[in-house]
Image 1: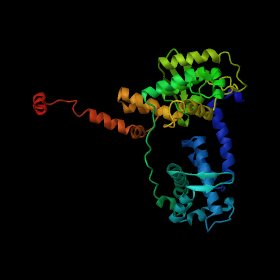
Image 2 (image 1 turned 60 degrees about the vertical axis):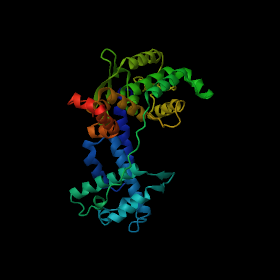
Image 3 (image 1 turned 135 degrees about the vertical axis):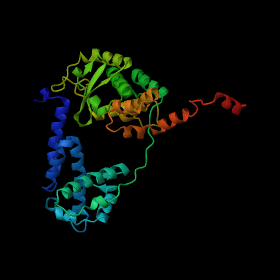
Image 4 (image 1 turned 30 degrees about the horizontal axis):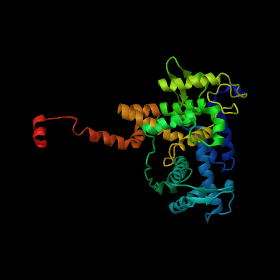
Length: 357
């Protein structure tokens, strides 16, 4: 069965089973909420909700004065309704740093915001259905998020990174032992990420049949399962062709026959393995920038915007559903372009010349 399913279909099935495991530990009525959001969310998104709500209910069970020691399965909607905005704020303060059953957890601004968003959605569903009359999370303001500086590679660093992948310079002796076996594959992946702006999950999900060299296109699955075609340039094509010569000689493990990028164990590469690969090579060229696959995506978006000046094109190619997401990332560049345009249009050449004399 596994062999006949695509990577993305199998991922959805695995996520569905994982979601069932997580919701089994939540109050029974929570299943209504997850069924309601199913049509507009992926299983992966619902798992994130389930994790966040699990943390919330565990907090109530352990720490809330009114519900402390009450089994999670017995916490009712009326119990939730009796919580105050202050109770919610205390929970948000708690999740900034807390001990779980097996490890210590820290949530920074973005993590706190996500958990509050999950809680707001959860309460909003039951409030709209009139199962509760009060909605305390709706009275709690979202935490302020400090904008992060967007890290990108400059043109010289891009060339240095690809050179590092190709020649293995500055790798450790242990890393060099594997480099000869993986450098063609690694160069294809790195060139693909830098040359198309793919998300690492999209890269991992590529199958052999998804490449169309005739039209220089790749079929990928975006967030939410949407299938789209993106296009690649000559450098990406050459890197992929070099890798495919090696790929043809590999014998994949059962269930991984269709995967484009294989690990040394002849299995489909994972997101974590590509993240580790990028980190390994990036550390040989810069210790100041924490380069991840997402930073390579930002690097591609920056270059595309610099070349075209078309924010809508960048949003479309990167797969942003809202162009404002793209504009937020490249706002500084837009301001720079606006500044450069200040003298682009001349109204009276004579007056300008007299001013400069």
